[in-house]
Amino acid sequence: QNALYQSCHEDENDVQTISHKCQVVGREHYEQLTRGRRCQDRQDLYYLAGTYDPTTGRLVTADGVPILC
Image (tube, rainbow, N blue to C red):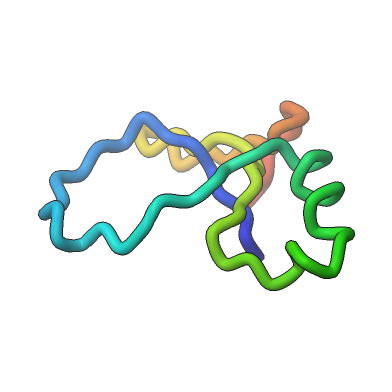
């Protein structure tokens, strides 16, 4: 939950499909922020879990560990 993967994949999206800005941080920073009661329910806070290569379908964690799917 709240994990995002960066990718070089591109899509065209209509500007009307954007609902709001969000904040993406590293996993450690995310855990620090969500420890406080105020930030536990933030729906605009995500952490960078790794990368996705759309040409190979390969997922790699932020620590460089491949994920087998």
